[in-house]
Length: 296
Length: 186
Image (cartoon, rainbow over the protein chains, first blue to last red):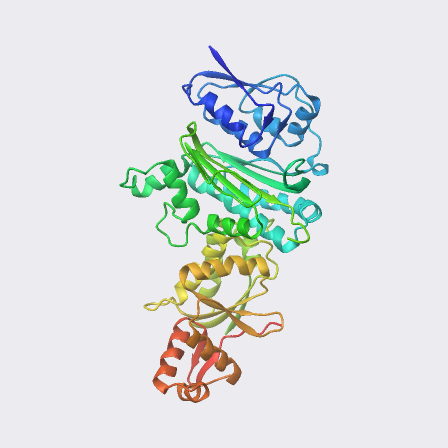
């Protein structure tokens, strides 16, 4: 039997919870079909999250391609299908990929498995970042460097903590309704590895408190810089990312297991912590950097 | 002996000749080992100018591996690896961000050479150490008694501060007195 998972019309980190909710009750060996035929838009979180789902399934899943030509073309340009074809049985018409360099795709969906992948991500994004980040977000080149540092550190977290590969994508776009139509750049890094709680437990075991769980693990790592390594130099990457986010009024959210923590800027009304979410392996990180206005 | 080490060249030699960015811990560890090999060849007492001019990006993880772990080997109170002093040269603002963060994390300090050639301290330095270091730079060379006179502290305090600065490899100890660590590149 195949269970059909409906992919929302507009797929971002919030609407992705609908997919997690549909997946949570299913055993990992159950055959699933992700039906994206009616999907019209996906954020980097959406695209990387869809690939991550396939990595959690024991039975090769099926993916139904968006019927809207523009949507499918965009997903092709973002290299989604290039990787999805290795993970899913694809049904529907996959458009031929065109060069992404002319679009707002800052970094196509890219696997993060080995250290050299981080070098590739950094080298690739530097080629386009200068133009897109400086023109759309009015970032100075020194800020672009810090943006790339943040991206590098988040990608390294996958390699060091997930125990499996993950996916990264970066896109710049204009918000139609929020922030007065400002441009934003969005980074998503998703993996289906061990997640934050298991990573911490791997060195110290569960904390001796009733509160111990995914939420507390996220608090300790994201807010307090805890890490499974004894080396006092560890844990600086995420803290550096937080500093950058804070300086640039950006937003950081990290979902792992059944919890999600966020550093919420004044322009957003998200919850700082969400618990009791549908369980999903690994960690899913999103960073949003808004355009800096002249008076900011 | 003064040795100039182009960090970008070490990266290309140690990791990959296509890379220009110092990112990831394994890359940082490989570059640090490359620098250590170089230092092993230049004698027991040396001044190394680490040149970051051609380095693109330096992330926090790589800065921790290269800068913090390198310094820790040469500023140990017990058995420093050898008497090697460092001047960090050619750093841009993003390099400085990452390096400041790791220095703070480990309580370390280093000497950097600014664009105008003047030396400057980065990292965790107590006020009395900073005052002494700045005075040594101004004087060019000083013994404890000279420093005590110059900054108005008892000689034993000046001697202790200079010893601390020397152990942290922020000044060079010579028979004639203490001299500031500074590079020769401009």
